[in-house]
Image (cartoon, rainbow, N blue to C red):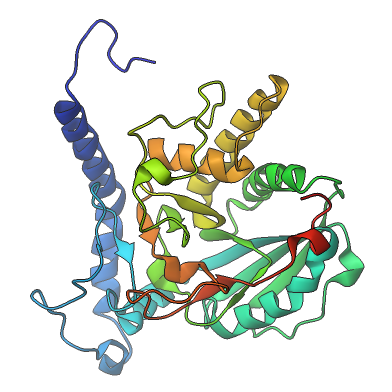
Length: 333
């Protein structure tokens, strides 16, 4: 669909216009919060709350890109100061939420997921974890810290893992629309994973994507985008930015609601025409993130794969998918 019918716009001009629009939106949305932040920082109870190493403008990570072409931060170990970020967001009294789906035999991963989340996921903050499952009786009892809670929501079983994956956006959309006034941010995470290190306020943003550990070093011609034009998840040759994983994404509730609603609508429209994207919700998510650029990109530290050796630029694994036998846990492979 042409953005400007009847006119020819160069790629360079269009890119500049997009960048200008993104910058304007960011400034207008954040100007007030920056003023509030400055005022709040001046009222910290103790200067110890903000004692951290002086930031440098000449030294830092030189082995990775820490800023996307549309000026979104790419978060790696060594690119942020945890103490400063936590101090700022605790003053704002933010409320976090997270979703995890454990359908069928995937309930076997819940215990590790929930216990390690207590150790590493937004420690010291209000967190509400929502577990979607068709086996509520299998949800383990996990001791949670004050201010943190778990809610179990029943969902139907399915004989196709692809259908389970596809319906996730529907359930996320419904939850977010119910909880818009209760939480500030939400992350949607895969249950067959566990936390190993800090996942905290450095990850917060309007729309947050995670670089897929299997493709972040590759040329985009090798990305497993949906390449059939008949699918609404289509990304053509020479298009796309990064390849994002479907196992971890998030942002403000409003932004995640828009993402989930769009991906669900596109998936259902494809299904009516008997089209199923190559990687179901992940394909639709990548299409959405290409058109609607994420305001923050998390490095593969935030969803590594246990079967992979760490590459030199991976200084820490914060969250990873565990090694598993898909034939034993999926209803179909």
